[in-house]
Image (cartoon, one colour):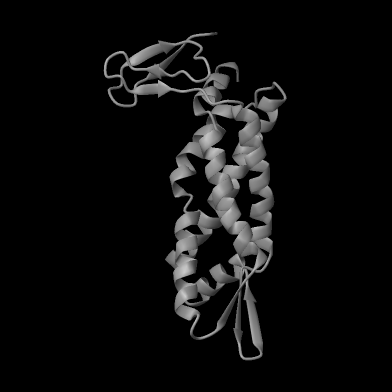
Amino acid sequence: MTEHLIACHACDLLHRVGDVPLGGSACCSRCGTPLYRPKRDSINRSLAFTMAGVIFYLIANTHPFLGFQIGSQLRETTLATGIFQLYQQDMFIIATLVLFTVVIVPAIHLLSMLYILVPLRAKMTPTFLAPVFRLYLMLKPWGMLEIFMLGILVSAIKLVKMATIIPGVALFAFMALIFVLSAMTVTLDEHLIWKKTEYS
């Protein structure tokens, strides 16, 4: 099937869009809004960033995030212990929000992309492609790693007069994860994924 319907993001006019060459784009015939611009080697590039993201995610969640040294005492924290401390201080809403947006959502994003991209690279179509991709798109706005990192930096600046802040391996992995997830999103050709649902 070489043609399919696509709605304009601005005026909702339906179009039949065929194959668009690399470097070109399909535009709305009524308002001129770009509808679709194919991305070069999207599946391979997105899969590479996804696999890198899995590595950084595991490091960020299993290694020390920050160390606080006061005199001769050194205390290291991880993401999990930080969230647990919020629960212990009765900040249930904040702790749950951090757990959801910083731990659960990125994990779902990475697992969803692996479930979708690994079979597609092998020229196969995963069984539940459409619902898994809808879940990915639905949760995408809830990935707030950048906001969490900004909060960590602000807190570290405030604590620098009270203790020596020692950045851990997980902090650098977390920063790398932010860029990798952004690159995964940029290189992912969502239109191509939706085309694959026609055969699922």
